[in-house]
Length: 451
Image (cartoon, rainbow, N blue to C red):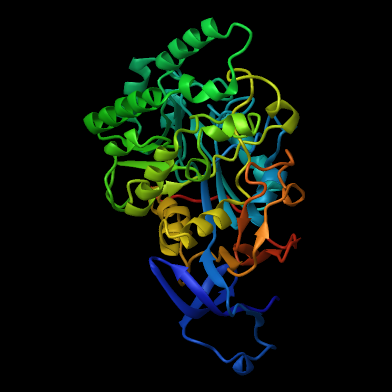
């Protein structure tokens, strides 16, 4: 039988606090949590496996509520095995995968197949959204939401062709579904009209720099307005994903997710990049919704700090580099890989003064746990699952292509310098990643939800 583990003398950051302390891990759980400096010489190595965390940050494992791991149907871009491996290297211990795969996850049968695949292939804990369509309401209402985080609603087209534009069906979803409606909010009508205008101007192909004009701020604003008004009218639990504009922030209230019926997410690319990068990188940073202006980026940073933005999801969406580098504002694929570097990059933004380290931990760990009512994850607490990340805050490095573990083999953040390196990732009490080495010791579990 394996011995309990003890992580000693790290700076523990959880639940809005930071303190020097030690964590005892036993049988997959945090069995004890002690405040203060511990003399390692007083610990019996016959009783504990000892991990010295002096000078390190010790955080709850990241819950990434928004990934596209491309499995099934697009596994040339990534799959559950490769992308969850990248996640673990980035301190992510649980992920929620989106339904726009091939086939789409719009039935219990398709969801069960993805769950079975994850049980055999995932390196970290997993859950899968169901996708809303005009004709699968019965399937949605009969699903088991102790095992499913919620329903994904596409009000704007994206990879996978899951646009749900029928007003009657959308209203029915808001009126009848009791759980979290995670919404991609862009007005397809506005996008279509913008596309028509630019196609007339540029019949041989619309330059990449106009992507943000086609998928415009107005398209985001009007779709978010529509979703928020409907949620207010019906009492639905709405979570607007990947907010990209300052304009949309008017719909969200500063504070925490507790007691809120309408909440918001943004993604690292909207906090780190702006629309000018799309043309500069040859389309590598093209995404949906589109990157917006530098003013929008700064407004989103402020909103993350004051709580109008409640969660950070990576929107990890790998594509082959060869496809990203060809095409125009319409034909080049949208999406980029992010899951491996989100935590270090958000900590870097905290170090720059945009918000606190406690805010990073809240938006990436605690807030997703509270928003989705996740059972015993998202915090460093006694009797919670031992999902833990150990960070070296003084190991400066540059993100390079050879570091990328996603199957696509590239990152939009190449060349960025960060000071925060993930040294260890613990999944369900087992050391899954240790100083660049994958141990294979962990057993990933399906995330459970309290309903």
